[in-house]
Length: 527
Image (tube, rainbow, N blue to C red; front, side):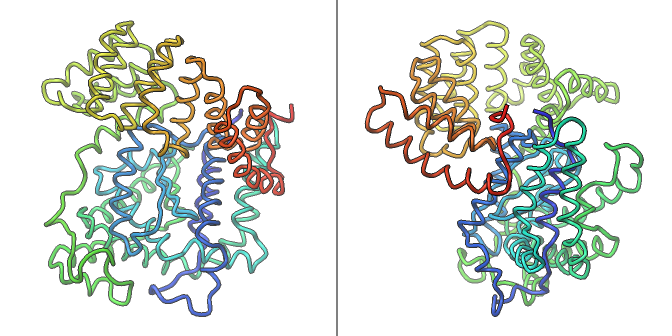
């Protein structure tokens, strides 16, 4: 399936993040319908639908190791926010443009380009803390209220923009999507002009407080703003060198940077200045005892994983594995690769099918990173890639024994077993995946891997269920429903399998009907 232009997804979600009226303070919702326009469950469903559509068109970067790092960072911020009970979903985009965005249901996306541009995890945290504040302050939800009053159904306009692109063909699909988005976005932009500065200021102030509470460096927000501003001033011309998309929806001015620095200095000078910096805003974290602050003195920012995550993203966001290898060769000509970059080069060699070259890079890191889980997974995969299956299994079995519920370990081993295409490997993959079944209903990588394991293990019913779940989570709800209805007609279903299938049909049908109502149909099913 043809991908939409990279900027399309950014505009779709940035529209949600940037079209909300501001509040100078976190005030009660007296006389406002924002809190009742869409309930939490509806917001969550729209967020899920949008994420599935983006995944369907290939924008999402689903990698268990990167996900573990990003979710750890995001969960740390959200737990320290003004609404720690709010559910958040943090996901990574493949796009190398510099951007991050929030939409309904607490869904926050981060472009690979933002991480590649950042100099530390604290700087990434500074941007995401800002996006968390957009969610906790109901900026997005209030934008829906205003959009509805203007007869622009924002959420469905976003999904509709994707639908227009999916129904267009050839080179026109990108233009069609952009036109649809522009139509929906134009009014929103006009309506938000008077509010952008105050919205951003509020999100900066609350984001700074979240950074402080979670133990990150509060000066990192201003540093990241400066990086993006410098990028917009020095890079001109081509598509890959345009102004960072983040600056289009989150204007960064010298005044804003200065205010961020002043606010950070207040936090650094004394924890007591937190009240001054956020006077009039929401109270302290309700899950903490009164007066208790979690700041730099009592927490350590990051887990040391940022550099490795950044290099893994460098590889996974490159056009091809050979292109990533070439990028590391250019970096090596400028100076010796550091440990994180050597790890990235090993990942690139692995994805290019060069098991021996990957093992060489990974083994060079053993003296200083011998106990690192990411490195251990890479070594096991490199063994498998060069045909050393017994050695690969020994490494993986050791990891699974030590961390039986580690998502990255289990999925890497199961995928390696799946490549062998025999029943014994399939059954072993099923065995190690089963402990994660209960917590992986919305994990497309798990569902795809479990489907493949069940398929080669000779378990067609479980395989069919998992393939349908994979289709649904990848934005193909109509195909998932068709797969489940076909599976339901099998005569060998037992009571429990039939009950599971009937329950999923009942759950998925409303989503399919809503998408069809908006004109979004699966193009593959129409052929």
